[in-house]
Amino acid sequence: MRLIFLGAGEFGLPTLQHLHATHELLAVVSQPDKPAGRRRKLTPTPIAGFALEKGLTLLRPEDVNAPEVVAPLAALKADAAVVIAFGQKLGPELLAALGGLTVNLHSSLLPKLRGAAPINWAILNGEARTGLSVIALAQRMDAGLVYAQAATPIDPRETAGELHDRLAVMGPGIVESVLTQWKGGTLKGEVQDESLATRAPKLSKADASVSFDATAEEVRRRVHGLTPWPGVQVGWVASEKSAEKLAEPAGAAGPGEMIFLRRVAAEPASNAAADRGAVRDGAEPGTLIAPDRVAVRDGAVRLLEVQAPGGKPMPIADFLRGHRMKPGDRLVRWQPMA
Image (cartoon, rainbow, N blue to C red; front, side, top):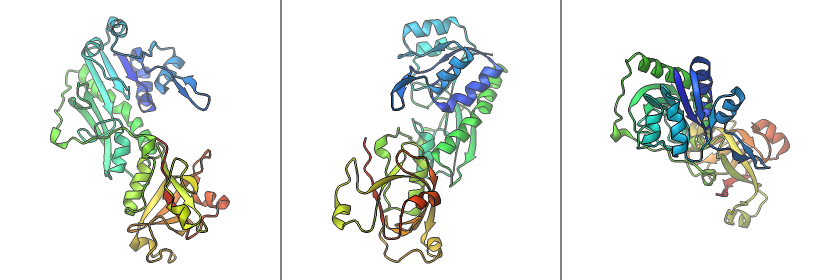
């Protein structure tokens, strides 16, 4: 099949690789190069990088709907187009130029979690499962006809980054099935039930915090739903620090030493209390009740993986070898820079 692919992020890379191996890719459309790293070097998107490596025709327009972009795409006379994590809205003229079918791969079970961050919000909201939807492009965000869906459970130990990678690998199969049905004349779409629609708004660095005055499960969902980006930052304050220091407003620098929480386990009171008598009655949320456990509203959260600024994520046991966290220390809300 003669295809055009539009995408930018890593989520679409497995599907692009599959389409390149099994179809005729006439063109790849991605976003312009952006500064990355400390030196702010202009860097292609993951999708553009693959296209360059394979010598594919590549467009990187600032405005994908500009006439000088639409015209050459129309001249290719593609059969169909696949859109994954592209980042620009496609106008009617462009859609007409992309062939007889244009589909979008979205990382949720629509109509749930329409928007920019469905994988994160699936975990943040405590969903038991999520998945993929292949839909028709529509002028309203993620509201098109649903052609196919694939569901998968969410493991409580799974972070948003891990779920992202697992869903991405599921993409080629479901996209290929839709293309096959369309080519065979059997493709049918279902209208989404608007009464079931929920939102998954874009996240920012300003979201990179957690309150320990919450349940253990809520803290777990917050940490895992925001890992690896924007992350969850906390301030570690040793018990010797003064109460006045803890009472200071947390500015961009925050109190104490900043660390990222990367993976945790929820331990409600019935479970945490049985662990070596670690839980003390009356421990305030945020207090370390063991070097690797922090009190929350209904028990404790066990720290499994953390990261120091500029370092790499590491198991808590490795972190504690070089950092003397101890019972009575506090983990406090860190106000990240927006």
